[in-house]
Image (tube, rainbow, N blue to C red; front, side, top):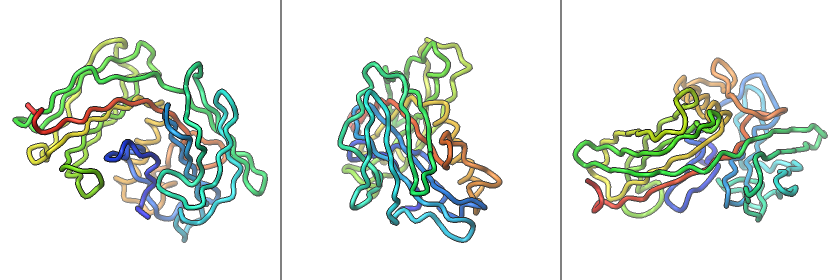
Length: 268
């Protein structure tokens, strides 16, 4: 399995969360569970769970994990262990997340030792890319989008993929990502953001993705980035993961997204 947990699939050509891979080395002086759950309106509920062993062992994502997992939305959704775990998750439920009338989701997990793992996440508002330009002359992608008047709604992930035709990692030339904390900016305005990617000149298509995420997800993604940048042997020291789960390591969060798929004929 790939060294990292790719928690979600976005259409057939894009895996979008997390942007940073989990360093799959020893976990430091801890034991317990690692949990990642990214909920997206309109998609099935899926969750990744792995047992953490201290110091000398890595996380084994292929080992079955016995947990009682449920998510409270408008009703309580009990996730089932999948017979054959995939990168989508080793727990899932064939119910799509309907955000209508909801502002929060709640996670509840009981371990075989009757330990209770909990988390709560807000549900971000929808996000829209209002305009985009892919430039061959400058090898750049520029988007415009409106921020929220609510500061807690102004955390984003903006990414660009330069691709050959077709889906799959073999057709990915380059992916560039920026993390945007606009919570301290003036809200309710249209802003412009640009990503430069040299491989645009060779690309046959560009995927543009904008996610509105929670503050907890933003902090978690940044901590993953810092852990990977440190090339450290442990994700608990010196750069710990900043999650939001009580009783376990990881993240339980929700996000909304908008995307554009731009063919070369539409580059400027």
